[in-house]
Amino acid sequence: MRRHSITSEEKAKEADIMITPLADVSFTILITLMVLTPVIILSSRLHVNLPEATTIEPPTEKNITITITSEHEISINNELVTREQLATVLSKTIRKNPNDLLLIRTDKELETGTVMNIIALAKKLGARSISIATVQR
Image 1: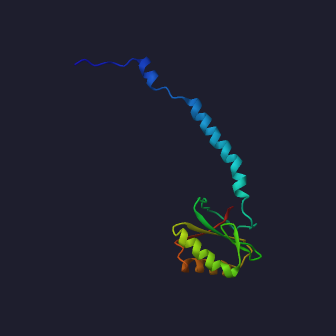
Image 2: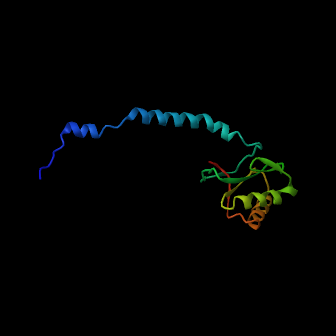
Image 3: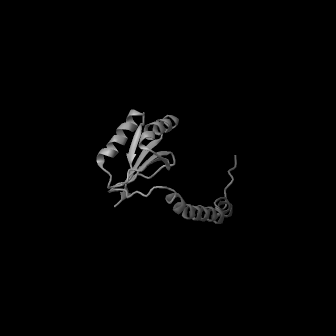
C-alpha cells in the first residue's frame, strides 16, 4: 500500500481561511451593538439613582424588573402600577415567567424597609431568584 504524501502547496490550500468575511461580520455586529446600546439603556421610563457596589451582575434578557423611584413610583417591566396593583400585577408576571430573575431597581435614597417589603412580597408570590440592581463603583 502506497502512501500519498501531501505537498506544502496542498497544505496551504487546506489551511486557507477567508478573513475578510469574518471581519465584515464582526464589524457589523460591533456597529449594531454600538447603535442599539443607548436605545436600550434609555428605554426605561423612570429615572432611578442606583446604589453603588463593587460587583455587578450583567443584565440578562429574561428579567422581571421592578423599578421604584424616591417618590415611590413603581413600575413592573416599565409599566407604571399603583401600590394597590403591585401584588396583582407582580403575581401575574411571576406566574407567567416563574424562572425569570426578579431584578429590583430602587433609588439609593429609598428606605430599606420599602425594598425589604418588595422582596418579601416577591418571595411570597413565588419568585425563585431575586437580585438588586446597582452601578459599578
